[in-house]
Image 1 (tube, rainbow, N blue to C red):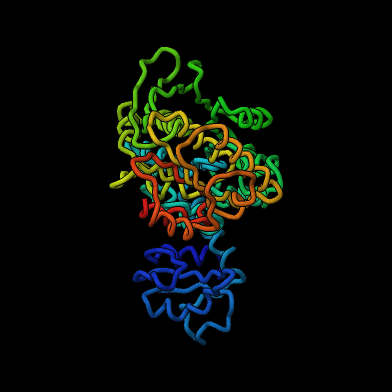
Image 2 (spheres, helix red, strand yellow):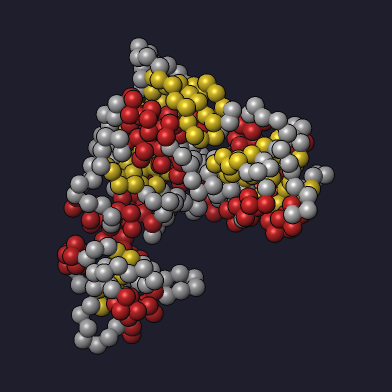
Length: 434
């Protein structure tokens, strides 16, 4: 079957699904494979559950004579090609977002701002990989004026692939830092991979990028490429400038457009001075696409973070700052610096290992421990094998369950507690015991 013929079937279907447990009526099932599953096995079940058609790449799973089975050479490649074809047919303006830290929060802030004045589509959750990006694009409708597409990567070449699928018109790299070094090989590998978004945009005429002017790595990356940059940062000469005015515990900041405009003050429900560039990125893109200042301020002030990212939770015994979705040396240090400067008493820290750092892991975990030694937090609890291997005298636990068992008999009280670690350490499970 040709791609154009498959596209007509897609248009007749209600939605695309890759999960045979979720098959809405008249949907199109695409049988993907993973390390522990083969979607082809569930194709017949998907038809019984309500799908109109199933796309498979193993013919043995097709029922003879049943035209609802569409056989292709590779289901993942077909999903990606179908998404790119759909994106081209609609011609929606696409904004791509990547970066080491803050890309999901930035995507959420930008989407909240743009939604004030435009009908937009944006990445749900963190569906930002080689499967999530095409599935997001396939949700595009003619009424969408803009699409905000988050792109993640942990190996070289992945952003290039995602950019070629989504074909963005605009790009934003939030920052570059030390994350997934096991896959990237080095910090330079991180810069090169994130820079693949800039490289793709160089191939498009008049492509615009939004750049944090205060970040020297981003400035270096954009200056070596033929792009049209829109700058934001602390310098008042920029397209959008801003500075922090409060952080106890929520971020408050002022921003203005150019030198002459009046400042706008925004009181956010988001923790961390490190989120200022993310908020300014949303202001910048909102302003660029014609969202009024008061609408921008309203969107940012009412945004409430979810998914354990810079989240504040008040329990019966403590105030928790929950940032357990991800962690790398850059984001960990930023969170600790922000926490140290925060106006709060009886500060405690619960940190989990930072995953996927490869040969740099021992050094980077020791740097965090050395930082903790320099500052007098009321209590420090460390979780994971990497932190346990560092030189320190803090309380240490092999895993989150060990910590939970200890907390049930002895936990911090009347404290403000920063909880941060890689998702795989499962510090989110600790929250209920604090």
